Image (tube, helix red, strand yellow):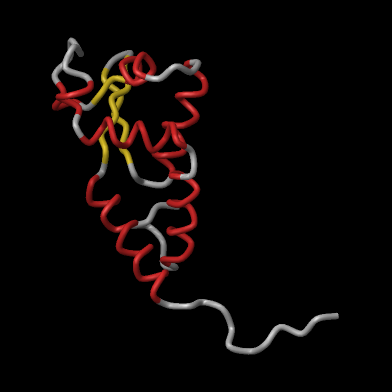
Length: 121
């Protein structure tokens, strides 16, 4: 469920926070913000996005680990993927990132806990 696709913003917030919980996913998002800076050597045009192979080369992890991180970011709606022939290209969804930040700000300003005291057993 993505930030955009949920009726309950808290649910999308939780998924977004989980997606950002790992430093590698945050690094991938940061690099995708400036693909010209980090992936200039890519043979295909960056207008397609960044090839998964380029992302894998920029991180010191296995292909399967990077794929799992990309899947988590995509499931949260923070990146989009597009298959072109044998390649998959990824782009950061800056609008989704901004929505997540807005929902997080709102959540931090509005307590969600009940005003009733918790009864200990």
